[in-house]
Image 1 (cartoon, rainbow, N blue to C red):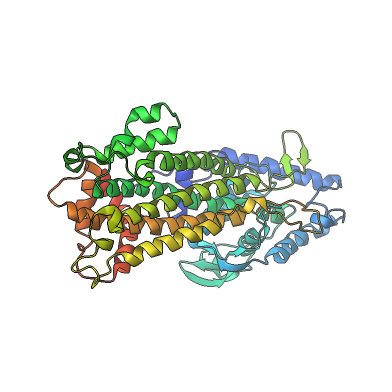
Image 2 (image 1 turned 60 degrees about the horizontal axis):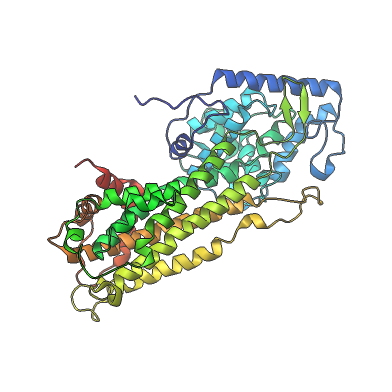
Amino acid sequence: MPTLPPALDGQSLALNTAFAVAHGAAVPPIDPAAMERVRAGRALVSQLLASGRAVYGITTGFGKLKHVQIEAADAATLQLNLLRSHAVGVGPHAPENAVRLLLLLRLNTLLRGNSGVRPEVCELLLAMLQRNVLPLVPEQGSVGACGDLAPLAHLALVMVGEGEAHVNGVLMPGSEALERAGLKPLTLEAKEGLALINGTSFSTAVAVLAHGKARCALRHANLAAAMTIEALQGSHRPFDARVAAIRPHPGHARVAERMRALLQNSAIAAEHEHCNRVQDPYSLRCTPQVHGAVEDALQHTGEVFHREMNSATDNPLLFPEDGESLSAGNFHGEAVALAADYAKCAVAELGSIAERRIENLVNPDLSHLPPFLAGGKPGLNSGLMMAQVTAAALVSENKGLAHPASVDSIPTSANQEDHVSMSPIAARTFRAITENVRHVLAVEILAATFALDWQKGRRAGDGVEAARQFLAQEIAPPSEDRLFGKDIRHVRELMDSGRLMSAVLKPR
């Protein structure tokens, strides 16, 4: 039986655990010490209510209505009204993996004990995850401050038996979803509605999922580049460790090392070691510099997302040890927005340089191979002519998507929220760019596979050769024109499933 990752404690959730839970892995249990912190936070809420003091969101209205005093008898109604009024999201619904991660992240942040909810709230979030009760969450409607209010309101509505949810893929009213899963709806108490919706969990969930796929894309980009280099008889000398040593960016060194591993023991390289070609195009020669910079960007942004997953991001924040409630701005998504914008620009560059390598593969003036790698009679057959156009279209689309969302702000809530982050937009465009780049890389891997077919009889480097042999069993060689779109989709499936990379990394 597989071992569960460490217990959820609000402070140490790892990116790989979050990614795994989002895709259906078992949910870690709640750390009992974290639940004690939750109880302490809730006790402080009770004290504040008894004191009669004006405390934002507990005994007052929200946003511009912060000066409106709320009677203690209306505390529960205030929280329910908050969910109903804020569940105004529109647009496409978040995919199931994003909703699973959203539930996990909201649970994790509440477990820090600074939000003032009862243990029952955390227990219901955990149970919904375990029983696959996934609220229907529209993706549009948040500006990333005061947190991701609209998406999280849709999530929280199901917890009180309203809204809609999927249970095992079937959409139904929230009340029915809970009943079918053997769960009872909550009756919210003071602070709990606000604690559930006031935070960056939606932006962070989308960004974390995109980040995991971007890391996967980078690994395949390194392989694609190595395959193209071998197919075009490119030089291995730019990947010398000495080159990276005198420009010590860590990503550069790691990518160069991976390229050497993929290309080692190449008979193709040995045969053209003394040819008269001095330098390759930048898209081949500068792989460590470009891919390495992307790796460094993803390393940095991963650290940001990891910190955000393990933060208390609502308002007001409760500090039971001091008996204080502080109104502050941890709900502001600027950290997530800037990181997602940085990451998406980096990943867009993976697609940009890959498209140039595709051009080098299909252009006969550059490759000295059949035009567009067409089998049979070029002219009668077009080969991968349009596949390069598809890659070019995706790369161009990414240029528009890469515009930083974080440079925009628009005042909301009667100017109470006068500067916002646009973190959910940054995260969603990060995801869109990453998906486009994964398609571009599938085109390059297909083109490089066809081009390597013209190197028959000559063994490629270890990693490239393993990929070639694996792909030879999955993809027919270039011959007469066929539905190459199906081949591109199949390569993408091999990438997504991990089968291609497993074949490359398999001990030989």
